[in-house]
Image 1 (cartoon, rainbow, N blue to C red):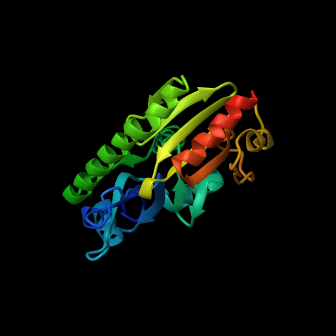
Image 2 (tube, one colour):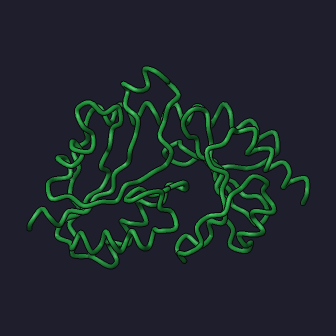
Length: 236
């Protein structure tokens, strides 16, 4: 099978080199969906570059598939969460599983390729996840417990999920001490979410996918996020 039919999902992360200047630096939850004419490892090295301070980790790849067609289809489906070009927001950390399930169901002919992890990427990822998890436990968890809110921390330690009445909320730890609050609801509209949570922003509405995602407060301080949450609780 020609290697032209290789679809991949990559995750950008900061390297140890950049962390030497800022030990708290991490990448926000972003995924890249693209295709390559070579092996995933070769493409990863191309994206990484020898002098770039940013590591690009390819986490999944498939061959024996019409990669260009499937890539275009996925980009259309995920357009609501597109940041720029091939990069997509993955605030609830479900994009990888969603794409994998999509390919299993609609393209059973696809062959998943084994990805050989770059040692530097692995080390940087583990360091980032550890710092992110520590920040959640020391900064976010105490505030939630003070409000008597039950929560769940994601498996990768990057975010916290919790419920407030008709809403399901996610707080993700980002770079520079910033956080993002994503607001989900099966019963409330986007306008209601914007009204209920001060400082929140409307999401693109031209896609029917991810329909429960109503709004978010992106790249904000934790104080601003909890001020918005406190206001919602007090007004209920």
